[in-house]
Amino acid sequence: MKLTLKIWRQKNFDTKGSIVNYEIDNISPDMSFLEMLDVLNADLILRDEDPVSFDHDCREGICGSCSLFINGQAHGPDRRITTCQLHMRKFKDGDTIYIEPFRAKAFPVIKDLVVDRSAFDRIQQSGGYISINTSGNTQDANSIPINKDDADDAFDAATCIGCGACVATCKNSSAMLFVGAKVSQYSLLPQGQTEASRRVTNMVNQMDLEGFGNCSNTGACEVECPKGISLDNIARMNRELIRASINK
Amino acid sequence: MKNFLFTSIGKKVSMALSAIFLMIFLLQHFLINITSVFSESLFNWLSHFMGTNPLVQFILQPVLIAGVIFHFVMGFYLEIQNRRATKYEYQKERGGANSTWMSRNMIWSGLVILSFLVLHFIDFWIPEMNYKYVEFLPDDPDRYYEELVHKFENPFRVSLYCASFVLLALHLLHGFSSALKSMGTNKSYASSVKNLSLVYSIGIPAGFCFIAIFHYIFH
Image (cartoon, rainbow over all chains, first blue to last red; front, top):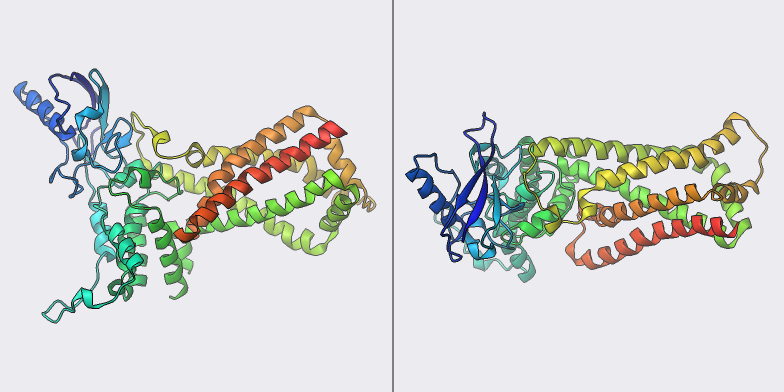
């Protein structure tokens, strides 16, 4: 395959970026999208040019490291996959592909296609955990009966890998799908009930502090989420915060 | 609770509450107006009641105006906040691949509705206030039907009203279910919310269009 790549290049956070065109040849349809970028970078290095920086780690859709806004969509044109799971057979010979970093004020560009998603870490640190004694007396989780529907919903919420596609896709750069999933995965289970009020209050406050936008329920985040996290998690977070504010 | 109202979710919930309040008002406005199609006397009686009842005039009406102003001001405020949060535009973006036009353009459909409200106030509300509280004209319980029919003699006004109702329908098609989601409705009600949203969002604006066209054709 022969492709034209329009890639966002930006030296660092303080400099202004722009789209740079690259022509690339001999791309196999069986390559993953990231392997295609590896080929481009190998070319650039041979030409003594600065390779394109992009995030990646596990390359099997689990770690949430890879990002990229490809041809106007987070993680590219396919559904329920991360960029590392996207294959070049989804494109045609001669295509032009736009590759941009996830854009949000709360996700500043570090270099080229790499953005700083540590805002998510700070939200997690503000309440995305349960406090239990792990000094050897830990109760077996299976000894606590849990409604099957709740267990399923909690597990679905817990599949969020924190990639940030929801923020990148949202026209308001809202992080509510991420925070909603993290709130839900604990609040649905008995182990998470004790700290439920404090958790949702702290996580929402931290989300607001980070500068994410407001949710207007467009549903774009749900569609583009590689793990199919549902908007129901946002509604649950809203209920949790309303309840926490009333019971204060 | 005070802190809650200043969180992003608190703002979203207050926006949803004002939307639900306005939708309830719109329903009662429609139910009164539709009577003009089949009973001149009933329409006059209802309009006279609404126009002279002190509870409606001096409590509900100011609350309604406050609700309208709050909804618009909050809408603009959130839009500005959201634009600041996005910071950059993508070079290529396919919004249509994952969301509806209505959900992405609430601010624009809202602006059209705001412009319509200005026209509607000039057409009906300001003359009514002038009649009652400026010129202190004598009470006439039978004037409302004639005033309504007279306004819809002009085809340009009827077209403008109908075009605004189309935008209102688009605004409601996203706004109705969005308001209920913001209030945290459980997913078990999703199907009922969707159906109710469709019936309300298309039914009410279509009904208002019908009233305007009916009076234009038959009078």
